[in-house]
Amino acid sequence: MGLLEVKNLTKFFGGLRALNNVNMEVDKGEILGIIGSNGAGKTTLFDNITGFYRPDGGQVLFKGENITGLKPHVVCQRGITRTFQLVKPFAELTVLDNVMIGSFIRTSNGAEVRKKAQGILDFTGLRGREEQLAKDLTIPDRKRLELARALATEPELLLLDEVMSGLNPTESAAAQELVRKVRDGGVTILVVEHVMRAVMSISDRIIVLHYGEVIAQGTPKEISQNERVIESYLGRASFA
Image 1 (cartoon, rainbow, N blue to C red):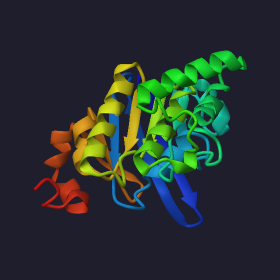
Image 2: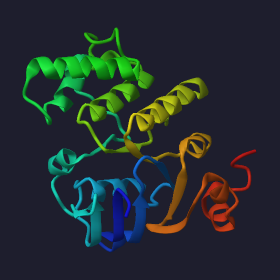
Image 3: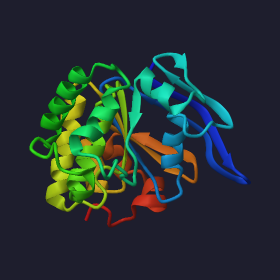
Image 4: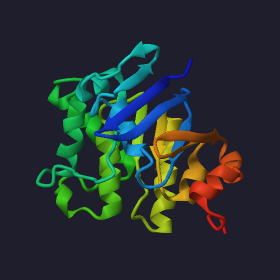
């Protein structure tokens, strides 16, 4: 049994089937990558796992417990946290305050929350920017802040939605190293990413979505050699 199990998950938007009987497992301690073209259903899958949408069919099980359709804050309390493709921090609050907000889901002790948030800023490389307003951060630092806010909720499973998009190669490499460090700290990771070299580098396994269906899953090497994946998504020059 995986830490997270998705069984026959289906979601419609009007007449459009965004997810079609998706089945997958995430094992404790792994980094599982999800790839697919725009509109493949990747973010919709995240939305259904974390309670932002209620699926029209199927189940989401976390540690064997059915969490299908629970509210996002309840899912978060259970131990699943996500980041968002479009990073939207509390712009007029400081970096420290942004991270502290996430910590309050576990405790109401202000001193404890502050200490914990400062430790997370150290971990994510944001120490020294505590009093800076979130709106004044660079894109890479906003991405780090998004991750820091998620870590403040103490997740067992972290869903990362394009955490490396918009970064240059040096910034992307640093982001990959941070993701590995999070996993090494005991957090299981499910990551959606369009930057192929990045997702192939950090993932233990990869699942490929195509028009709401899982068309392949396997190791990065297996996926890069899968003819259906190459034709439908990767293309012949993806790793040239």
